[in-house]
Image (tube, rainbow, N blue to C red; front, side, top):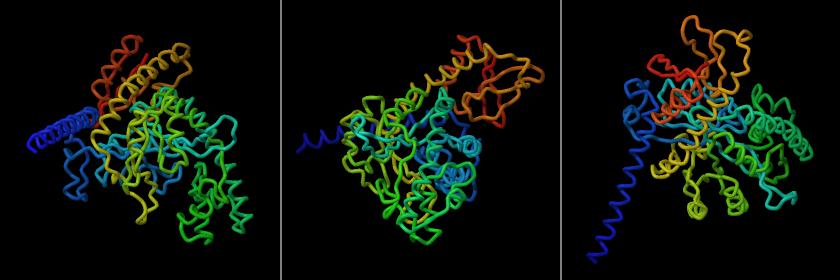
Length: 428
């Protein structure tokens, strides 16, 4: 009995030690890249328990805005996350990163670290040319400076978004055959200007037309995968999605694997082409077996609320899915080298791009926004420059990487301080 107790005591101490180390790593990663606690905006309307800038770092890694099928604008998503105590937020709209700039502006105000993300729509086909695939969503998480080749990523995402319009037309035709006619203008109005429509927008139109009582009912009866009103779009192969994410400096995570018919087959195939992890954490605790699946293939274990802002008792709010510090520690250990390499590639691309530029044709202080996030800031009063603005959320190690690469590529390196936030700028 005594020896058994000592063994258990030893395991508990070892576990506590690992947890403490993971927590310390996360705290250092967050605060090295953010404003100091005294510079963070504190909302007096918040409960006292959420006002303390030294509270644990809460992550939210799966959220959507009105830029895809969410109900809240990107800035409103960040605002809600802040009110819920979230300190690190990934905005992961479907097939678009259009909401990142607006989200970043509000995140900087609140001292929230924003992880630029996207959820890519894909299809998994067990056998080549079998013609029988199932929808798969792959989450991409990028570093503070964004994708290494945003143009390549955006071109592929744009083709997927274009396919959504044709997909909706097919779905409306199927609904018409089911005696539930809807106009495409109705769905477009719900989606909003410039937003590629999706199933959720069709479901909301069905509710407004009183064909169903709730969005959930629209999905459960008609719009579920393979349902009577379901249709596919221009999704890319799941393997291509993973490879695209890896090629553009991101971390690839399989979203909600519990919704797949054969998750083991999907994970096995995607792991072979570079998949980094899968979602296993969810608020209802119904991800039984997926922890073991992640372990079997040595994959990261992540999760998030998949927040859309619909409201109601069935939706998990931002920051309400508990992800252990140990899991986030592993995520950051894998992500950091990838994001560091992304910074190097962004700087290299910038250096190559400006070689052939005719500076006489450029407006003063024109910015080649490799990170696509930050607005241009003037450097000096009269100097004519072409500048690449990097994120103010770079960690100490990432800043060293920028400095070293700038020297190698013979680029100037400047730090601009504005209202307590530093912007890192490289230029010719």
